[in-house]
Image (cartoon, rainbow, N blue to C red; front, side):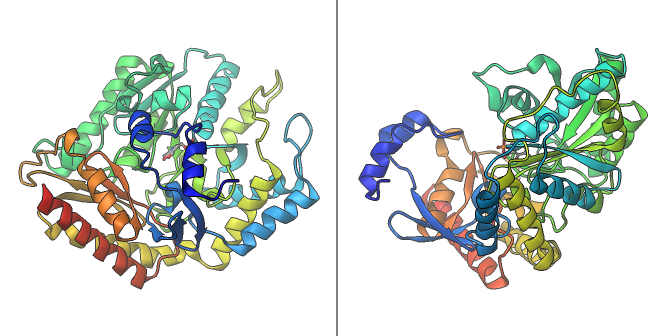
Length: 450
Ligand SMILES: Cc1ncc(COP(=O)(O)O)c(C=O)c1O
């Protein structure tokens, strides 16, 4: 493996980065090479220490390089490197993790299908519901309600459920999906009160169901807090009311907890504990192994499981690496660490402190809105905070602030006019203070230069 930065970059010319401006990247060669990581920090090829302010990609919840994780994965590989969970095969790690995840999930979600990514978890949820409805003799009940601003993944179907802006220039399974209004009050509220806006959103849901026909809709899918759409929280009570409308119309509610589960909002799962509702399916990934191994889970209700596991046919779905032993061992060790170190409980305090510290940045003129919860936060920059006028794309304000942060030792994620922060969940108050200081400095520097 190459060690010299120039060799690495030369080799990297063969790599297609994800969600990147490939043309710009190859032309400028401006890539950050991360060579190692420990705890809340990563280190680049120049040896600089950087606070991992995005927790890998909202996934390294317990922090990097945890020795117990590395031992658990290594021991598993030494004992059983690979076996599938296909046909009548299973293995102890997958079985134990399925039982553990079911125990942590809300009470009627007791069975788990494993995949390799959040995208696959969401595809699996829809495929299972299609099969469920075919078994129930209603093959037309297959359309999905999603929302503008959603991010559900990058496979053909998951991308179709994602907000259309992400698939401009690409084909995806759009004819299966209808997008409801974005729940972003600050941007979309249009002079209404938050309560009126919430009513309008529910009217949009009800009206869409009426127009499309509940008999044609299998699911409503929603992230508890929209992540890659810019960290958008819906008005209080949104999820519960949407869930009730879905229940009344025999439409399954899929909570995409790929980001929000495993501690990020202070609980193992947020749907019930934070948002007071119990979905029919929860999909999750990322924090399930804290990113140490690729693993996702589609957790389904007893009622769905009863139908898909009934007589009359096989369950024709799965991936070679569904429940991979090393990934399952990582999931088990990760949950054990979270339970022992009481990470979700700690996040209720440290995450609230992080949120408060970030919200204190509203005193900077260029900051339009600060949103999110606990360790899932977004800062939107505006040219004029009173009119909420955005900076044009050409300004690249998010990118400029992210670069200014990185210069000061913090990785943050730019997304147009928004900067996303989703650090590891092991931050203490001193580190949080440091993040706030870096952000303040970086934003002020960029603002002064515009
Ligand atoms: C809410 C949500 N769902 C699904 C996904 C897709 O997960 P993956 O990238 O593991 O396929 C993501 C990824 O960021 C996500 O944020």
